[in-house]
Length: 591
Image 1: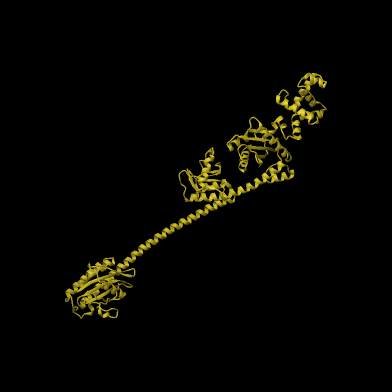
Image 2: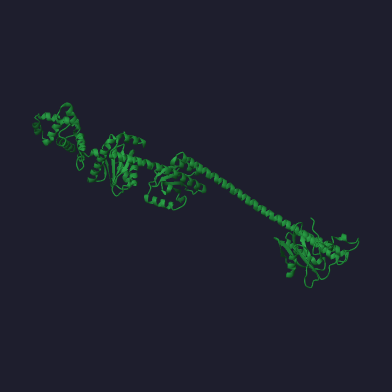
């Protein structure tokens, strides 16, 4: 390594001859002038400097190197180290040595030199110099020395050597520090790069997972798979059992192991509390062994999507999959809800028109459009429940209960009751019992019409169902189901009964006898009427008909066979007597 020359006397680089380069500048065989005077002393001084150079080069702290040099200044001549400065961050920092504080004037003078060598004035010290400690490309510091007399040639040479050794050691220390700093910086950069790489890999993996989740859930929704497809996809993504419940807590879909059988019946109060608790939070909420979120397009809660996570294994990827599935399911259920509302509106409109009476051809066409077979015999079912407002919610409850009984129907509602135009006769107590479970109370009544074979008969069926409901409400046991075709005499009692109802009653009880008389020119209906007019007395009846008693017995037996009614049964006997009276008085005995 080469070092720049140090000028002990000049204030700039133009006085190069002031600093000898070595013993080559002396006459052959002559010792340097001045102190030390002998070659032995000079050689010892050089040896000391050589030994010092090893110590300087072994030291890797620039301040310590400068301190060693300042400690050995007096060994190379009648010098004293006044101050030392180390370059740090573009500035000069004083390096304390020998326990001596240098005058402030020295500090100012060194900074004025701006990297050049130059004289320094110190009180009581006739000679003083600030010597720059330079490397190849930079200044490492300053060594300020003074003397009480002008240095000899030898002393100047030795001081120059000490400066060079010190500058070389400081250059080495600086290079080592720079390499060390670079190594630390390189290590830091490498660590940062590795961290960024790991972060980038994580981000890429996260983005890929997000895309995979979004793509899968979107594809499921696009294919119209509905709840089953969404829960199946969510289970596949997370490995956890996935389920969908409606807003009332009833299971709609489950995918995965450990499905409860039977599924627990929801508690309405606890269900509402749960919905409100989850609605207050942003994102999925853990409740017990479930991680769940609401399915609510446009703010309306349509259901709950949940994962069974008993071991608490769910991570941010699980939450992401659940949120994406909930978004997809919300869109699907919202779309289905919109379609259902449109269809419900069409079905209610058709039901209203059928109850009021409408064109048959139009009714058939409209029913086919909404997927309802109106060609089958239908029953009109009227449902009324005490202490329940007849709103859309109650109408949905009735429709859900009817569907659970296998009844396909058109549904509408009035101010105080719900009406079903059903394609099947309800079982005696099944619909009523299902509604008691749905509503939580037995305080309801159901009226069912006789079968309607065409749309034209539905308005009459509606009146029959209302009549059956009225009879049930007025009876001692005001709750339950009543069928119009089982009312008997009650079908024609009470206000609002018309001629058609009377005819239907007569036809039901003695219609077969009327037809028999018409075909065979017989008098079965007249015989039965006379029998009742005579209070069931055989002698009086036979006399009034001018026939033998045995003939009367034969006719009465034929009446039993033809009508299928038992005259000994009190209810049959009453209905037959009323029917003959209506036939004779109201209908004028007309066939």
